[in-house]
Length: 328
Ligand SMILES: Nc1nc2c(ncn2[C@@H]2O[C@H](COP(=O)(O)OP(=O)(O)OP(=O)(O)O)[C@@H](O)[C@H]2O)c(=O)[nH]1
Image (cartoon, rainbow, N blue to C red; front, side, top):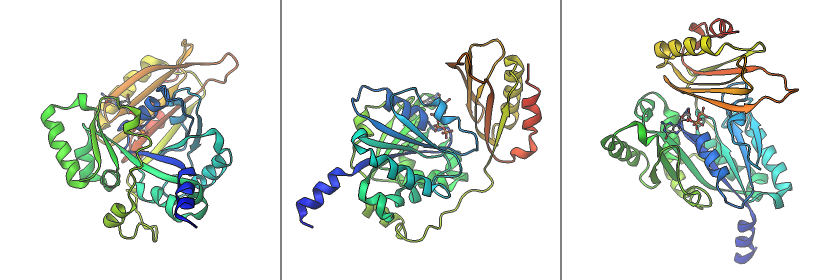
């Protein structure tokens, strides 16, 4: 193939941006920000989450974009086949998409995700990895670097880092964090952000992914897949069909996270609250809780509640009984 033919083939491949970062760092916040900007482009979004009940797709803004959900496992392990299949299907309709955005679970090792774009011949022919964007939670990252190798991998693989939640730490903390990040990854562009506010062009279409840099960190990148997970982190998904009493729920969850928030890394739910026409959206990172009104329930819609916890020792916390006691 001539050089010009190669470069035009490369240009035709659909660019893929991988959004990664530890649980609760701000990946969905970033995704929503990108999707609501006036970009005039059409993106396909692939969301993978940890936990059997899909909540993230409901938290992604109601944009024009089509959202594909992969909930049956971690994107870097069992659902890689799904990823390959979804991308294959997407590019068949390529005229409709300018780029693909993939939000990984907070526990994903980005290496096997990135690897998919180099080792799978079908994917490689149609899509190219544009960049890996890692969102870092300024408040919790130091603890996570101590106890989770995924957090370090996500930073090491990044082409762009958003040092997010700048509002929750001091300027001195931010400077210290930034130098810690630089120690792990000297080449990524680091942006300090609050709620992932950043111009779209700093994140998308960077053409930043550099295979040689990755091979220098992980020489076996294109070889065998041998990544490991922190098996101590598990998830529990709860489902209720009867309406929830919001006061009981707030009291229960407040106390639970106060007492167990170190072990509960992330929790989120979309609840059917008695007397409310809207979904009640709850989310927390450790003990920091946010509550919001979500979309209104449709008149014929079957209302129900979903709640997911991700963390350590969850089976000791009687979560099912606690949630059941919040029924109105
Ligand atoms: N104070 C503060 N809160 C933030 C910021 N960015 C995001 N949040 C909140 O942090 C929580 C987690 O944000 P998400 O965007 O859902 O994080 P995520 O990385 O997608 O979470 P998972 O997909 O569960 O791993 C939400 O309650 C956000 O509103 C920020 O800059 N400052």
